[in-house]
Image 1 (cartoon, one colour):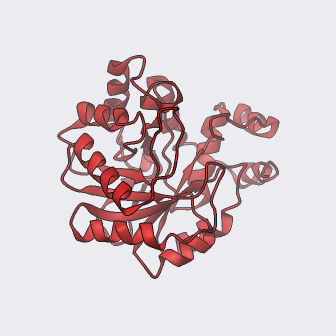
Image 2: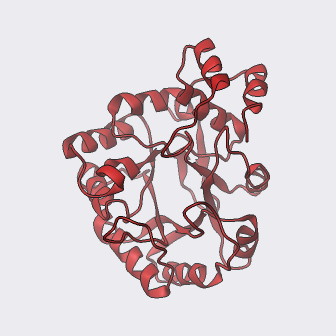
Image 3: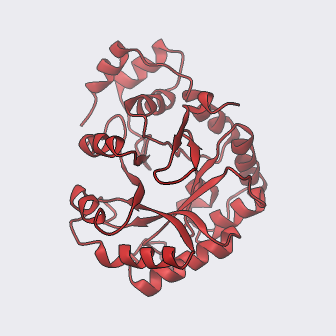
Length: 289
């Protein structure tokens, strides 16, 4: 399958890494609540291998998925990795025994997290590391200078090749510009939740990737009669329309929908070939919050 059928490709700023705009997110490779082993580890391995066979060369993961499990499954399924594969991971949180997600932004915690990712993925350097900040419900306005400088130091040591940001405010993005070259921003954004419209456009003008998390609404996928109507008219699913809208929204948007199902994986990839007319895009504009 060609990169065109995956929505084309995007070259990460300052690198030679051209990634498929339709990627894959590893969160659902683990057990319930993103904790422990999946119900069927062989099926999880098969989904990853099928993603690669379909042309996907952009994986999004974190060692706190499981914890450790998602990265270990990625290594089992794909190592030694294809030469063009870009694995993006994130640090800044950890998993507590009660399955919560406390922040982990001290220098020691970030350094330990980077080494956990290196070990469980089986690599000597991480392609891209996203600094995940903010709260469970969204960004805050706190300074990110200290944790971001920690990642800059780890990059100097050769453990990280590129740095991104996740769950950030516009103020934090502006703060980052004097500290590090940022190759991507990963924030909550989809056809319904469009609060980052301005940020998407600014990043596009600077050649920086924008990677929406919760592209299909989140742990509780959004419901929309308008979206369902458009999907029916295109003989597609609502999820496919939502993904296609993101790909058409801006050329710097990269998608990382996750699934543990081969059928859903193929549906997601097929969404990259779905064309939305201006009239359809206008109709979808009415459902934004």
